[in-house]
Amino acid sequence: MANKRIKYPGVGEVLYVKSRRARKFTLTVRPWRGVRVTLPWFSAYRDAEAFVKENLSWIEERIERARLYEKTNGDLRNRPASPEAEDALRLRARACLPGRTAMLAKEHGFTFRRVTVRRSRTRWGSCSAVNNINLSIFLVNLPGHLIDYVILHELVHTVHKNHSPAFWELLDKHTGGRARMLAKEIRKHRITI
Ligand SMILES: [Zn+2]
Image (cartoon, rainbow, N blue to C red; front, side, top):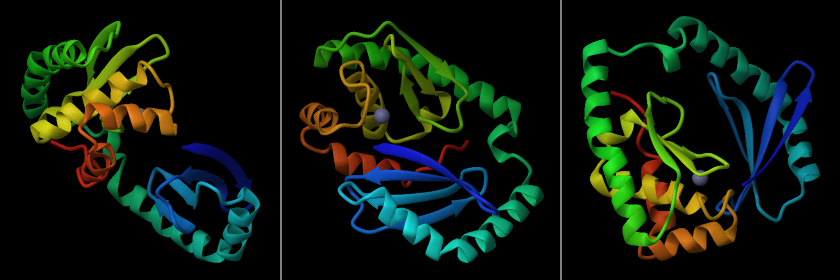
């Protein structure tokens, strides 16, 4: 995905995200995440900007609502869950995720430097520039095939540091042609205990 950020008076920053899946412009305003416009891969940013300008009052209204939600709900992302549940989850995650990562890396012929299990509520996983893989402890709550999907996704990032067609092609190869389907499926899951 290619991203661009533009600031507008009264609205603040708008994130433009080009997506290969998008067929039309889509506007979303989410608490903590702000304003985001998804646009089809081959469309021009200036067309998306015109679209945003046409919808500024709608965006402002949604921002109001999002702010109210943020105010009444506190910062859910950093709110500690029950410490015991989280400790149990961390133990489970540490017991299974590093081993599973090593196993999948070996099976699929990838190399990585280190795997770290973290209490991340914003991402299931990530891969650093030097191929350290970070996985969220919350991953262990997902069905097994999605845990494997996230791990393989990060392992493919050891080769491609982006979500280019080459990235998806390689991920497809290692997921039996199901990369897009799995990516779609995981979006239905929220990071939670
Ligand atoms: Zn990725």
